[in-house]
View 1 (cartoon, rainbow, N blue to C red):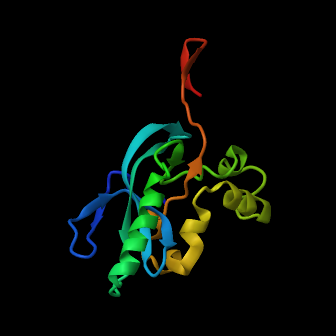
View 2: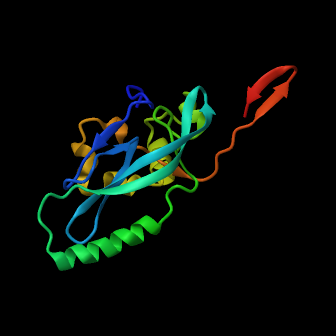
View 3: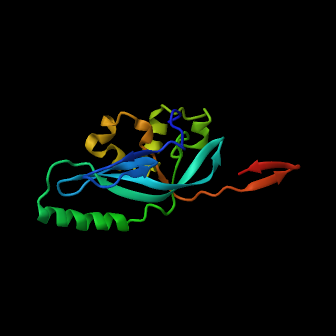
Length: 172
C-alpha cells in the first residue's frame, strides 16, 4: 500500500453513468446475475498511528461491473437487493489506512511478535478485516492491476487524543 498517495483519486464510469470519484475499493458482491463493486466515495482523516494516516469511511457507492444485459424483471429484483445493501450503513465505525494494517496487532506492525507473515498474524488479519470476504470473494481482487486500492477495513472505534507528559505532546 505504500505506493499509493491518499490524495490520489481515481474515477470510473459504468453503464454510461457519470464518473464517480473514489478513494478505494471495499469489495465485490454478486446479486442475482450482476457483480457490484463497493467503493469509498468519501473519507475523513481521523488520526495517525506511527505516522500512518487513518481514515473513517464517510460514503460508499455500489457500481455494477457486469457488462451483460440483464432482463428487466431481474434488474428490478437486483435493484431491490441493492437497496437493501445501501441501507447497511458502512459509514459508521469503519476505518482504513493506505499504509498501516489496522487488522494486525500493534506489536506485529512494529516488527515484533508474531511476525507479519506468520500463520497466526495472517489468521488475525483475516479475522479482524471486516470486508475480507467482499475483497476475496469471486476472485476479483486477483484481477486488479493495482491492489493498493483494495482497502482492508476494520469495524470498531477509533479515537485519538493529545496527552501532555513532562511538557511533551504525545498522541495516544
